[in-house]
Image (cartoon, rainbow, N blue to C red; front, side, top):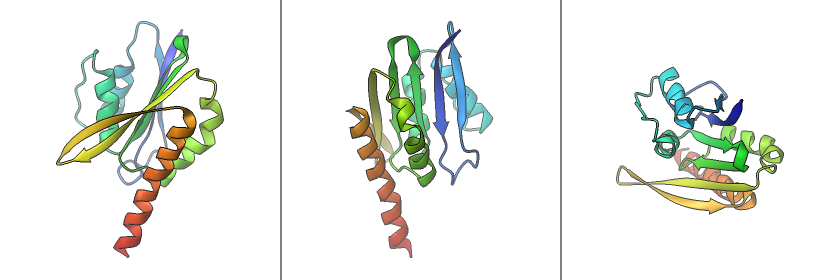
Amino acid sequence: MKRGSVVVIPDEDQILNDKFEQDVLYGEFHVKAYQNFSDKYKLGFKFSKDESQFAALMIASMGHFNYKTEDDISLLSFYLPERITNRQLEYFSLHKFDYQKYGQIGAYTIRMMDNDFFTDEIYGLDNIEKEIIKRNKLIKEENEHVR
């Protein structure tokens, strides 16, 4: 029986596949899905079973938008990389209606500083959407400066 799920929308500059998704069954840990993502794309992580939060943050720190669900308690947790790609923004927008069924919705955001990452928390789908759009604009601004 399904306990929840993990979804990763990779940074398209690093991984061409649109999406990685894995159900988490009762008796399993979400970290197993993050480990499978790491193994599939040869990212080199070796997460232990109690590192679900750390695994999600590490995947996000590499630029991969991801989230996990805990269906029994109606929880949805997003992990937002420092910059959100167009594909990641589009995925979020296409699935926003699906996210509204969760009673508790939060996000952890990544900020990089001196090769370290820091996290902040955001609550509420509207606030998360605003942050995603803001982080997507960072990429657009960087691309304009490169021209």
